[in-house]
Structures are given as structure tokens and as C-alpha cells.
Length: 383
Ligand SMILES: *Cc1c(COP(=O)(O)O)cnc(C)c1O
Image 1 (tube, rainbow, N blue to C red):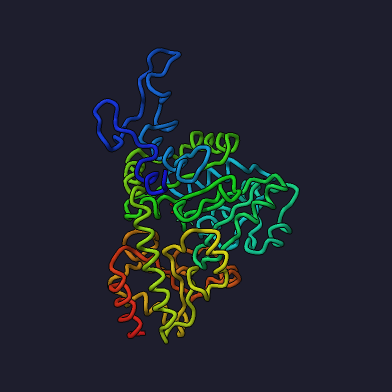
Image 2 (cartoon, helix red, strand yellow):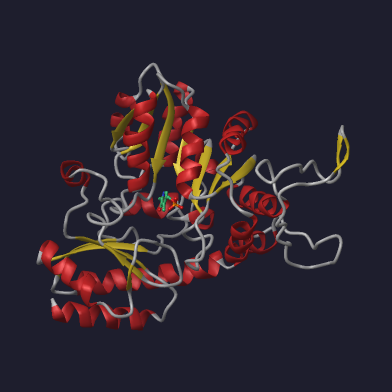
């Protein structure tokens, strides 16, 4: 079955009671049991432990990533929390990409450090640095590629060779490319993490998360946390995410094509000093971007000649692009990572990983590309 067919059809069956083509929203807390020893339908008992609408999304995402199973969460951060709790205990250590979603960094350094878990943040694009960071007590390697917001790539296959040799699970945050463009489990990873808030939803309507696992043991350890701590996705969110997922491929193809055109426009513009887009031949990991994934994505980061002052001026001058923190939606969004998404990193840490004060991040939406370019052009005239 082709990927677009899977996007539309996988996991979804007509409702056996009514024939409804869309999965019903099972808005219920409890499920009636046949007897003390028997559940009525499919083992559902209480919606924290499992809900049929959420289950359909979990089955769809399992097929899309080519995994063993999936569990869905209230947010992407709740999924990352379940990942950490499922894999690590006090005294354990994890190796994590030094450029990662700001919330991941905050959760590790400000929450799990207090519980006695150790973290080393390394440049996971540097394989020797990954090897050097591994300790006796390392129980998880967690990479984000492309990384938010500098779009630095990590070679998933190469890191999985290292993690397999050491018997350490490798988790990949695949939010930026989705399984339509990149399937980490096929490249040797053990776990895939998503903020479904972004491309799966795609319409700025929900917050949600998912973890797709490659084997039973890891799945059970992580799923145990989903139920024990109650960080579940609601049936409403699962239903909206199911509808968004069906159009993922057409949205990503259109938005990525626009992103490439916009990156080329910016690269030619006299007021722009740097453009970062994995689909530009000038991108320093262009080769890896072309081989590891089937698309380059919708995110473009850039810097203006006038640095932070001009960058801020641009973000305040755009009229069509929205100044907002989300990404992956049908609306084009513009963000200032150093004061918005990555404000929790201290200045030195930001500088070290390349999140400069002048960096602007654009999540290219589904509007006509020429309208987005016109908007950037008029704003650039003002700076
Ligand atoms: C947004 C995001 C997260 C966190 O997801 P939420 O749904 O906002 O909690 C994690 N990783 C990446 C790469 C993200 O972009």
C-alpha cells in the first residue's frame, strides 16, 4: 500500500454499528463490563487506560512509522516525559542532541535532574562526540533531526549503529519531517517521538503527542507510564488529529515546495546574511538531507544583515505571516527563537549551538507562495 493510501485509510474502519465512515468520538469515561471477569468490547475499561478513538490514531501512526505499536499523549512534551520515565531511573544517564526543542532541554535540566537523572547534551551530528558522551549508566540516546531551530541534521543510521553496539535504545524526535519524509525505525532507531500538534494536526487546532516503538519491551515500559501518570490524549484531539493526518502528504509537499522557493528568494536578497534550509545546495549537510529523508521540510531559518534589531523589525512588520510559536500548520508562522521557543536556554548555551539573537524561524504554510514572498519582501523593505 502506498504511503498516501496509508495516510487516508490505515487503522480506520467504518463504524460496525452505523457504517459511519469517520471514526466516532467515543466521549466516555467508563466501558461497561459483561461480567466481573469479562470486558464487553476489545478490553476497554476506563478512558485513561484506553479509548477507541485514540486507539484508531495509535494504529494509524504505527502503520505510518512502520512500528510495533504506538501510544498517544496530551502534548508532545507529555510524550517526551513518558519516554524519559519509561527508559530512565535515578542514577541513569541519557545522551541528547544539543540543539533540540526548548521544552525538551527545560524538562531534562529543570525537572529530571532533580530526580537524579543525568543528561549530556552533545552535537549528535558529530559521531565521535556521541561515542565519547556514552557512559556505563547511559540508558537512552535521544536525537532530534532536523533540529529546532537551526535545522542541524543527525545521521540516524550512523547513530543507531553506535547505539546498537552498546545496546542502548535510540529515540528520534521526528516532528519536523514526519514519517512521510523520514522513517527513523527503518534507519535503525528503536523509538520515534512526535508532537502531533505540528504536522499531523496541521491546522493549529490541538496539542498532542505520540510515541511509536519498534518492539514490545520498550512499548510496554512506555505505555505503563501513559496509564500510570495519565498523560493521555483526549478522544476529541485524537479525532481532529485523525482528520489532519489524512492530508499530511499534500500539505507537506505543497508547503515544502514553497519553503524551497522562499529560501531561494531570501538567499538572493541583499538584506539577508544567512539562509538555512536543508534543500539548498549551500546547506552544509545537503548530502545527508538528500539521502536520509525524502523531503526537506517546511522550516526555513535565516538571519538579516542588521542582526537582532533588523530581525525584530522584520517580525513586527510582516502582515500575512503570523508571529506565533507553533509550526507545521497551514498558516505561515514567523518566530524569534531566542526570545520565544528557546528562551529557556541561557545565552551562552544558545550561542554555542547557533541560536543567535538575530535568527528568525519561518514555518511555511499553505497560502499562495507568491503572497508569502510579497509579504516578506514588503517587510524587508522597511528594515
Ligand atoms: C513542539 C515540539 C515539541 C513539543 O510538543 P508540544 O506538543 O508543544 O508539547 C517537541 N519536539 C519538537 C521538535 C517540537 O517542535
